[in-house]
Amino acid sequence: MKPVPSQPPTLDAHDAGRLVELFREVAGLALGEDARPAIERKLRDRVIATGAETFGGYADLLRRDTPAARREIEEALDLVTTHETYFFREEYQLTAFSREIVPRLRELAASRRRLTVWSAGCATGEEAYSLAILLSEAPDLEGWDLRVLGTDLSKRCVAFARRAVYGKGSFRGSPGLAASSSFEPHEDGARVRGHLQDMCTFSQLNLLDEVRASVVGRADAVFCRNLLIYLVPEARKAVLGLLFERLVPGGFLMLGHSESLLAEPGPFEPVQLADTFVYRRPPTDSEPKKGVR
Image (tube, rainbow, N blue to C red):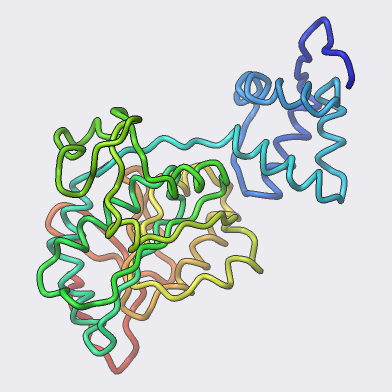
């Protein structure tokens, strides 16, 4: 084992640029010069743990074409990306989904009696379970096959979501939810009840990995909130192309409050709901374009 250096490694501008470029290539992250202090703080322990000794050595390690290097890139991306979330975040949009979008999806999917909602960038799973709660409580869906898929770049977040146990911080936007029928007491907080866990599937996924992303099934609705703002323009375009492809015709896309396609919607149709804008993949020519105002 290599000795721990007496002085912690520091990140200069050159090596910061190398790491930023790598993270852009692999995950499309938009990190500027102002991110250097955060990268240094978040990755210093990984530099030491891998024995790279310096950030330059660590950048060299990440560039190697080996399984160990690819695993380390995942570790690094896990540490430098944002995983902030909680139950029923941006509740106004979830309310719109429940009241206005689910009835339209119910009509859209009436022949197959199956609804699939994809939480792309699900972090630790609170959004996916919030969607499962809403679907389980929706009228006229009894006997339907209701599925929620949660994917995230972070393996740690996916493992956390699968555990389905949450502390107080996860309920800060929804007082009283932990004591509802959707949860059961747990020594570490509250655990999502089994019937809701059964609705949800979680997987690690880099949305820029075309091979792995191609195995994602078709979704009736996609939540991709507060993710595009962290991507460079070409990565945003690629992700939106993937989401469009995975949506069924007539399916809906929900973005975060600070994200908008109104100036350049591309193939998506903007849809004005009562309190928010959402987007959808246009129906096929044989389907009526309902709900677009």
